[in-house]
Image 1 (cartoon, one colour):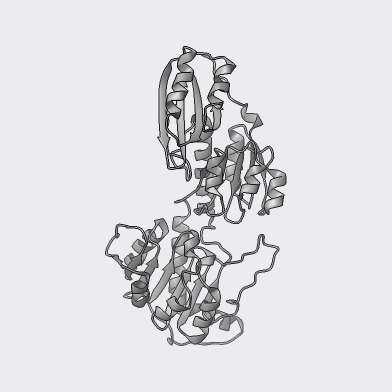
Image 2 (cartoon, helix red, strand yellow; image 1 turned 180 degrees about the horizontal axis):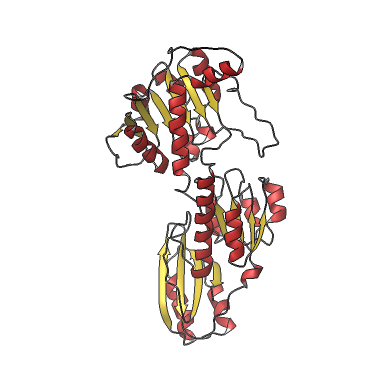
Length: 409
């Protein structure tokens, strides 16, 4: 039986913004898609202007995918977040419109952890101040405020992929590791779980944040939390900018409560490299400020630019949603002979039965069917082995609760 694509691949438009690695564009083009690559982020109006005919959108952390943007994207099938976080995307609105979202939860983990380890060592040795003194022509040879990291206590806030790998590497370098997470996480190596954030803060010589971008984490570290830390603590934030009250951090540095800080993310960041960076942390002693580059290594960017397109292409070609952020997860076999129908609907009772009734009324036999639901939507894949009249598609679209119907082939 000849297969008929729901739409030709050369009609699939892909928009990649925020300087996503060329590898992603190459993979999409090899699949036959039209690809536009933009090196900067887009604000809401700019994105609305570009997204009208786009079926696949690739972003990083700065581009905001709002309800308004989605309302102007009638053809959008998939969004790829070429980063870990997805808080910049209205996931619920995407579900309502049947738009699948993928991210890259593991691809830059090693890069972020290596930066954290490097900054812990540099801050423990007071190297930022010594380096700047050398550039001023000053020779400050001294062991004052300079320590090894061995036998120091590292407190990790957020024990996800990055926090857990940091735990392993820090312990291998001789640090004692404590961690705190709101979810139950298995301790790796000899790491010890703390029952509260304040318990961890009181124990740690070094505090490193690796939390996600959920709204509840806003300003989770403020004056009260800095006061709970040891005097002379080393503080790192390589997670999300808004989780730290930077004015409170500035005061803690000036008072000597925090003897060194490594900050890679900020509440307000420039949209592109031509815009100025402003922060109350500029010029603070023994402070490393980096421009949100924790995951910005060539290795990480290539990994991300390979992983995310592969997930999207698999979804387009087979309907698989294995690593999706917002869809029920299904791993699907390739259908060699037949047609595959994808039905996305609100998670209400009886939809699967009505799909089967429509097909049965036309004498269409089902050779394979897969259903997975979450609290919001249902995702049904139906494989059939005979031709069907256009009226079948119309009847399936008219089933109450239908969000999107797609004929894969």
